Length: 310
Image 1 (cartoon, rainbow, N blue to C red):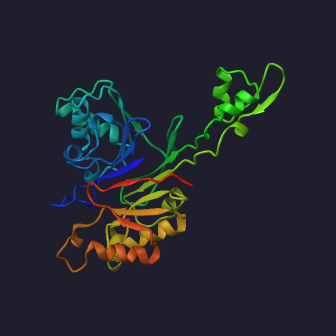
Image 2: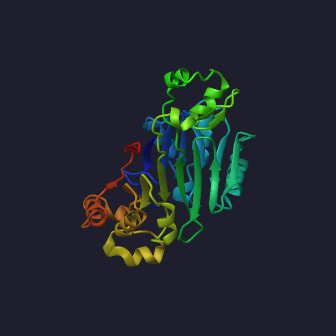
Image 3: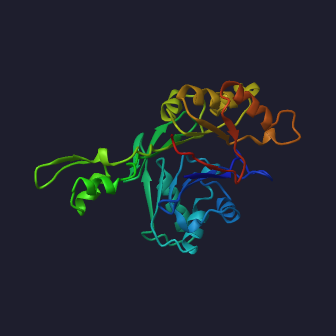
């Protein structure tokens, strides 16, 4: 499971940073899930190691342009890159109408390849290996944070031990590999967990933007392996953050601390902290690390491998 930052600027792109988009690579599924898709994301995809043909799901936090203006281009280029599968897009009310209008007036044929889902707080998507939940954050427009949960996997199945117990091979092995308890034809009861090694604990990735500090973000990020949280402003600009309902570096760090996350990665930085200004991003990192030491600053094309839990 790898996170790649395709855009880390807030509001507008800069020479060094594009606007918001994060890619989550799931190698075991050969899929890519995007979180937000600001203007220019398809160019960022071309410059990265992400295969646009593998984009399967796109999760949109809110309807501000720096998070959605790249959607149609990315969807179109994904189709041209050979992605014959359907793309599922999840986001707030109004997203479906926006995409339909874009397609109508640009004469783009989406057909049945695109499915749009309007989200509500709670479960957004679930499958055998992953589930995705969302929570309403605190911003000027409805904005949702997302929590991706990788489900626990059973440990290695000890086939030699199963054979030594004279368990007949066949479909029953599949049940035992999942840790299930089964009854053999002779009445013996076998606990699959006793034939499996230590389970692999699933990882949790949380994406929170745009938002000012709120309890919902803390709840969503609880015990996350990685929290990606916006840090539009420095602490000294907190008044501006409250006015515009964005976060400061210290707010992001407080969320990480209260939620008990393992790694905080800050993103969505205001261009006012670009090199050459009085306050720079290194200052924001220092502010955050004073509260939550395990903090990183995202930059465009920064890739982070989410470690497995021990």
